[in-house]
Image (cartoon, rainbow, N blue to C red; front, side, top):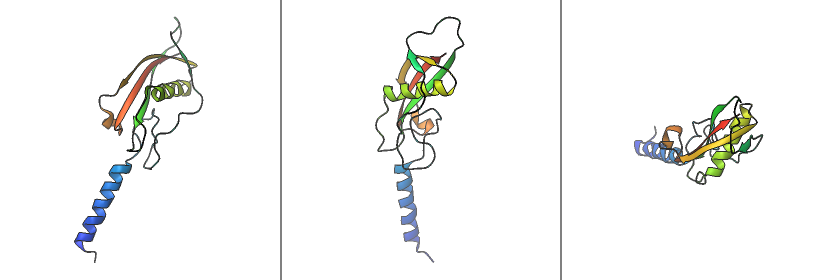
Length: 126
């Protein structure tokens, strides 16, 4: 039989490790890795929409968001640049060729998406 003190130590160790490692972000549109793993934020790669200043009149539009998330203790701080890259990627994945940036701002409640801190980029894709 396992001694209660050793069992308590094992559970304490697991709690500390899981707190430090954490899970992936719960948001699908972020630069953080998803699922339970030790990998940190990933570089945003792949097809991206063109970032433009203005949305032309008479085109189909959609609101798109992108998040930069500090999910692990060793992840870099979230940045506007990373959030904009995710925004451009999300627009392209949704089938749009261009996106106009509306704003970037820190999220009020990043813990709700399992991030220590996060920056959200909001845009209009067309």
